[in-house]
Image (tube, rainbow, N blue to C red; front, side, top):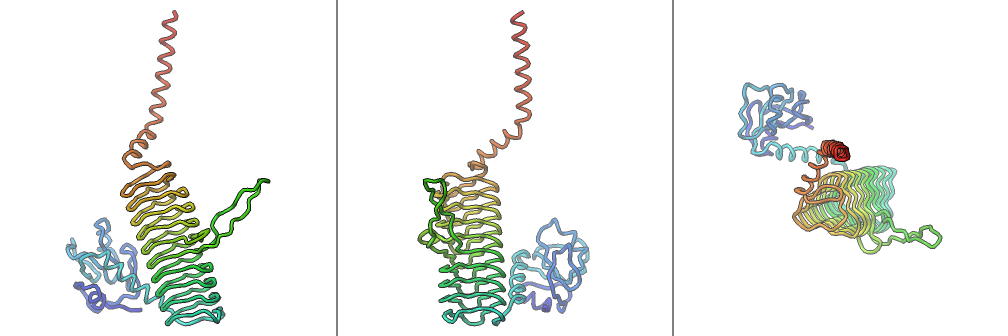
Amino acid sequence: MEFKAQSIADFLGGTIEGDANAIVTDVAKIEEGRPGTLAFLSNPKYNKYLYETEATIVIVNQDFEPETEVKPTLIRVPDAYKAFASLLELYQQAKGNKTGIENPSFIDASAKVGNDVYVGAFAYIGKNVRIGNHVKIYPQVYIGDNSIVGDDTILFAGAKIYEDSRIGEACIIHSGAVIGSDGFGFAPTEDGSYKKIPQVGNVILEDNVEIGANTTIDCATMGSTIIRKGTKIDNLVQIAHNVEVGENTVMAALTGIAGSSKIGKNCRFGGQVGIAGHITVGDNVNIGAMSGVNSSIKSNRTILGAPAMDIAQAAKVFAIFRNLPALREQVLDMGKQIAQIKIKLEE
């Protein structure tokens, strides 16, 4: 794939300084730029690389003023970061524009497959499955019976979609993700063993949801586990049965949500956050990395710690933790002084 500077500028509504016919075939970070690549500069910390980079074209902010002459062709735009993100999206679409059905793959006769669909080798599409238009199903994907996959969704290699799942439009499910596996439900018996509770619900992903690699979303015991529209979930996240996650919420890797908890919209979870079962987290809640939440949280709060608390209180607690070694020494010194005083009083 080749892109000329003029074509890129036209797409972004930017202006060119340099060779309008300069051609790029790949993208790169500005510090790793090489001939034929496109890079961007938005953070002033990286300004020095503009004068060293071998990139052919660099996207910069409209108000950027170089300190000396630069080698690459510059494309000026209002926001270089957003502009480059738009180009990466276009680049990815062009790069991954696969169509057709590869063999061997299995599509049940009762399944309905839309137009302009890609099905990779060794993919399995079960009974009564409905696949929308422009869907991309990469090799070794499993889609269980009675599932629905909406238009423009991408299922990367090895994703597993259990039966009765509902996947919305323009979703992205990365390799190794499992949607609809059994929830962790077991009833203790008199002899100390556990009897499995059948999990007969499903999972619903609304539109524009992204699920990271090796993330697991369990089906509901009854009803549905629901991930609302626009939510982005990182790799290696566990979402248990009957959880509901509100729209436009983001979760970083290694987060775990226990069963039947309800997460509001526009929340942001750092890595390794743990949410206990059967609690509610309100809208617009920010939870710092490695926090443990064991009770419900009201909307519009920022919390941190284990157990999690308001960030202002957490800052005070952590300040005390940092001072504990010094406080310990003070207490030990006080103990010695008290012992000496006792000895003098007894004389």
